[in-house]
Length: 212
Image (cartoon, rainbow, N blue to C red; front, side, top):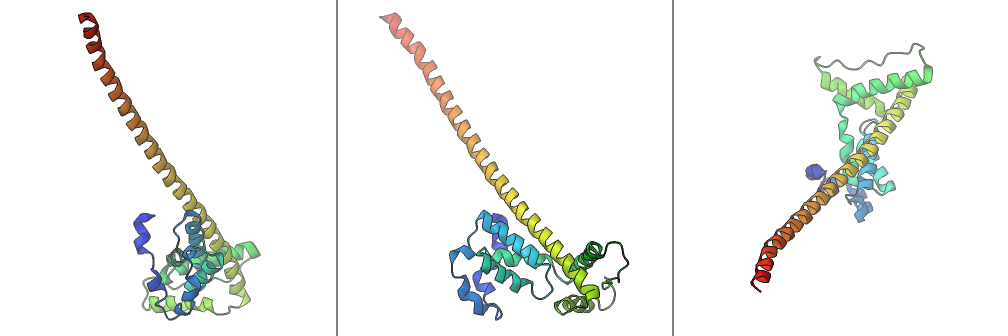
């Protein structure tokens, strides 16, 4: 985790935004910036869940959830960045198909068509395609899509939380094992020196006894 701490947005960068600046006073407590295992895991879960929400609400939703749950703000914001117009399109298509399957089973449903990658005007189409989900949708698309987003976002959040906990514990255990091994080696080296010293002293003692 230390390798990517420097990539996290700083307090100054976060609240330099005119959208976030009014909320700066809410995050004065150290708990919103503490780099602890449980807070990092929860913040990753928040970011992964909010990343599935319709654009452009991801950052603001992550900020509000981090405030309410009193957890690490930069990681919550940073963890939303796995979605963008390129990744959100296939994720929403998958969410729609998942929601349709869970709500309606195998019954035929309208196809949610995504912009074709490589076609002229793809990025403009992708932006419009993504932004439409920030607006009310009809029941034909809205209900299965919203349900699929909820299921996928929750799954990502739980997986992210568990993964951070596992990796963090593994790193702690590895450090402790290394420290214990180093301590054992140091003790063994000390014992070896003591034995060598005793062995050197033993002949001297025997010569002294013989001379007497």
